[in-house]
Length: 390
Ligand code: FAS
Ligand code: PHB
Image (cartoon, rainbow, N blue to C red; front, side, top):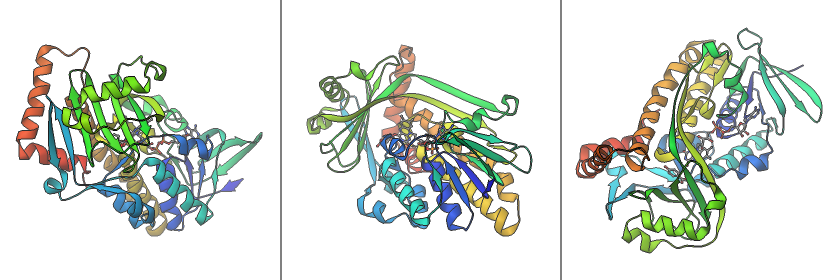
């Protein structure tokens, strides 16, 4: 039976970054991923990195391409009632955010792991954690019809919302909190210049829209869509027309249209599982929590989980101390819930809810009007958006 110190389930950003940091600390890991590397890279997801995330990537030797290709942003704009209101994130918080797609982060992490010669098993089937409530946890998986078993000291469940790790925990040991939103996000990618040099979040009677980007030649746009909508319901023309109707006229004029080369619909939910530790098994990233992308927190929360868990694991081996691991769940959940709150607040303020009463609508309008007229309110949004301290 092969043995490693830490077995990681999932080769998304959580698993790859955890493996990267632990390997740099001399801790032996293996990552077991049930999809192919191409499949993982083909998923278009997050685009915006908090300063805490880019700082950690640089600290761990992953800053070169990020610094060459990342777009540093110091502000964002809110569009409502036909007006555009800029919020100066850096003036309010002293920090900035960076546009650098999750695909690029994953690419850099994969390349770094390959360079270190650390093992990642792609297309591993039936990955299953065992005996994590004891002192000899192990993970089994099948590859090319052969069943393998890995003995380890710890298992990191980095396998996302639908992964096996959280499902392997006895339900009685788990408490979950969830809110499912009555709409989704339809997102497209197009090789056209972005409408603005910063992000524009729009609240309109027709629904939410977001103008973002991957570079100055590649744009990413989202519109809120009904839960039951399918991609085939949305031609490019319908998407561009709807997007223009939802943003302010000034932004609408600056939108360059073109054929989309990626189109996807994501459901929106807030979800948190507690606690995040079950003996020698730890939940990390989307395996532990999901946020609506309105606050651009999903990937960034995964990064702070990884920072906390890696510190605990390194302390276990280097200082023979269990303190960091004992504290992982409470420490991570403290930051998770603040990001879940912010993501819920941004989603509630910017989307049209089918069941909203006229009173609800007036409160939403007052929320927006107060926000853009109050430096204190804009500072609060800014410090959450750029990322609360790790
Ligand atoms: P991931 O889900 O990325 O990775 C988990 C990995 O585990 C996957 O590669 C999966 O194949 C693998 N896996 C699953 N089950 C397994 C099993 N049984 N055995 C082995 N491997 C298994 N965040 C933002 O900040 N902004 C956004 O705009 C944004 N948009 C999103 C759009 C969509 C459609 C989704 C689903 C998420 C989006 N997110 C966004 C959130 C997203 O970026 C996540 O926060 C981020 O991918 C979290 O990374 P991981 O925790 O690594 O989980
Ligand atoms: C993105 O660029 O994909 C993005 C940016 C900010 C968000 C959500 C998505 O809030």
